[in-house]
Image (tube, rainbow, N blue to C red; front, side, top):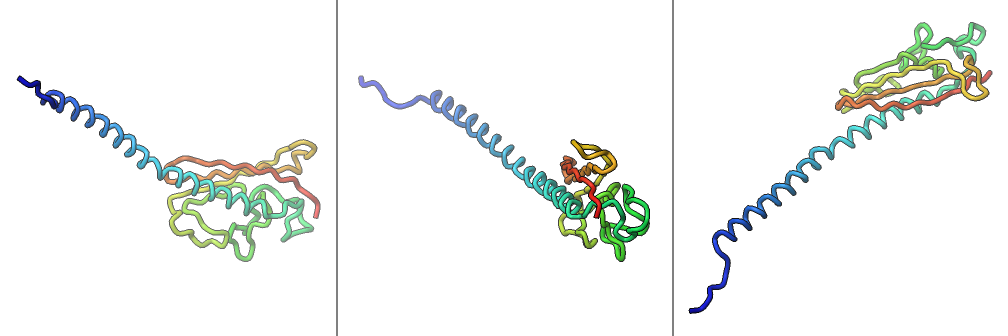
Length: 165
């Protein structure tokens, strides 16, 4: 009698079970990776919002006197009466004017809402601080915090030194 060649039913069932477990493991790993692939987009967008606001603040001259009232008292932290970020006739004119500023739903410097960013928020805190040879009265630490729809904040910091115009 000749020996039969091939696989038995038990061997086929064990093969199918092992392959099924491997396929389920691979699909689960891919599913997790695909689900989390959108998160970096939220983080990058939140970072871009914080960077944009900090660049806007850094573009302002940090002078001792308020440009709208050069003979008045020294410019205080926070906006002066009537100043707003998109203000007309008095927009923010100094980095310290942004202290206390916050927005939910990101807006451009001219006050128009930026489409698609309604669930993001940003806030600014500015405090006088010394650094190196710059005394506290002439140093300004600005902290911008942006938060995305996932609730994860991104915080950026800049330091400005006051100069006499």
